[in-house]
Image (cartoon, rainbow, N blue to C red):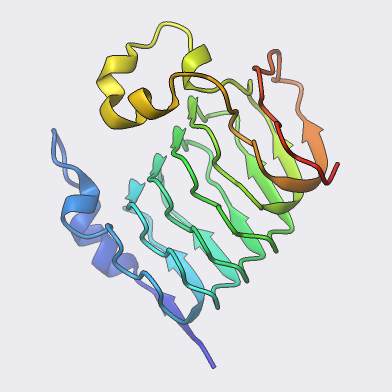
Length: 193
C-alpha cells in the first residue's frame, strides 16, 4: 500500500526563492520521482512544482495544491497513471510540456483562466473531461512574447506543428466563456472525441 504525504513545511523552505534562482535546482527537480505516495498535498508557499517532481509515481491518486503555484515544470506528473483528481489553482500562469503525460485516469482537468502560457503536448494520453477557461494557443502563437527568452523549450516548440492538447485522449471538452481563440493543432491527434 501507498502512503499519503503532506510536505508543505519542506516546500515552504524552498518555495520562496526570488530573483533568477530556479526552484527545481534546489528541491523540485525529480524530488519524489518514482515514489509510491497515494495522496500529495502541496503547501501554501509553493510557487513552482519542479521538473519531473512526481514523474513515474504510479500510485498517486490525488494532488491537493493549496498554494499559489504559478508554474508546473516539464513532466511534473508524467506517468502518474493512477492520478484521478488534481485541482489547478487560480493564479497558475504556466504549464510546460508533458506535465500530465500518461495520466490516463484524470477525471477532470480544469485549466484556469489565469494561465498565460500553455506549452505544446501538456497532456498526451490524458483522458477524461477537459475544461478550458482561456485561449488555447501554443508558443508559436503567443502574442507579444520574445520566444528567445524561453531558451530550449522555445527552440523545440516554436515550429507550431503541435498544440497544447495534441495527442490527448479526452472524451469530453468544455470551453469556457473566456475562450476566444483556438490555435492550430490545439487538439491534434485527439482521437477519443
